[in-house]
Image (tube, rainbow, N blue to C red):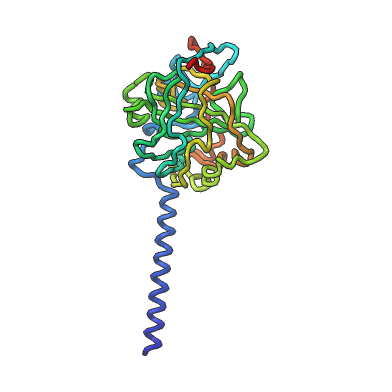
Length: 308
């Protein structure tokens, strides 16, 4: 009788441990392949893509503003840029602070990096061409099917394999969605960095690249170890281009001040290849960049060292 009870106890214990293990596996699976309903993405839900049936050439049918005169991206013609010496430099506050949490997601159009900071340590951009303060919101990545294309902007018609875009919203506006609804012409600032292929991996991109396999499916999101944004790009206060434009994806609202850093961030070919494994609802997302748009009557400014 004692042996029988001991055996039953051992079986019950093993079953309990097995159930606990399965529960943890289910939780991990849900974390990888679900999207929280209350999460604020960069834009409201819009139907678009980069395939032939729903690519940039079709956007004007659903989003009339995408046919406007101040659209992005553009080609930066360096010889025609107006040189400016600003009264104060571009100032970056708290980009060296580590967030409380950080997530990586695939919304079916791009990879998005998002951090959450305390109110007093939230990264903020001001100065230079900006007349207001702007809070960082998230970071988007754009890439192409090969290392000869992928960036949205071009520099003297030269394309880069990737472009990293740091989205900022005007202080007092809660999200890009609210900026779109308000139609504020100065509602959003996007700082763009080109990425250039090098022979070696960029270790500062490891936290992002090493977790891309977890968000291959569209509408997936995972938490990753938080790190300061300065790990992946260096703040700068001079020698950059700026112009007024639009969001580079629908609804293509013309509410953006673009700041373009001409010095690229390095990334290895193997690291770029990891981005090309990301999928949209149409299949592998090999290209998610909009073609350059006409400059029209706009000016491009090159900000040199400030006078102060």
